[in-house]
Length: 145
Image (tube, rainbow, N blue to C red):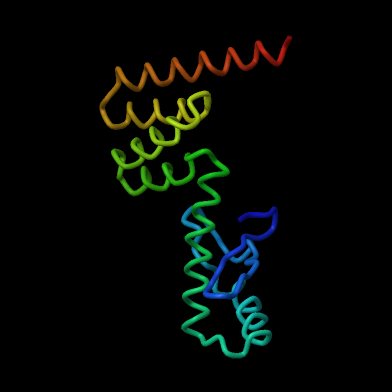
């Protein structure tokens, strides 16, 4: 679950609200300096939680934050990270999967078009870009009514 300033993570029988501010960068790495006060607070409140348990909790929180960020960006965040690592086919597949459930997302169609062109699939890329443009124009016209 996600809120504006935190995400909720379940660790065993413990449910914890983890501040989003402890994550940094596109890869949402845990910032040790920002995470330290949170670690201390949790371990002070729940003294039976070991350092290893905190590491597990923070890693779960990172995975949840990646999932939440991807959901918030309609698949584009994770796809961009995959593309930056040179995993174009995975990035394309990730966006296509998102577009199956949200086919009217013009921005994701644009991004898919860019990735397809980058992967050497220009015809498919141009079709995706055109589809995104058509959706954007259609959405603008509906707003203008």
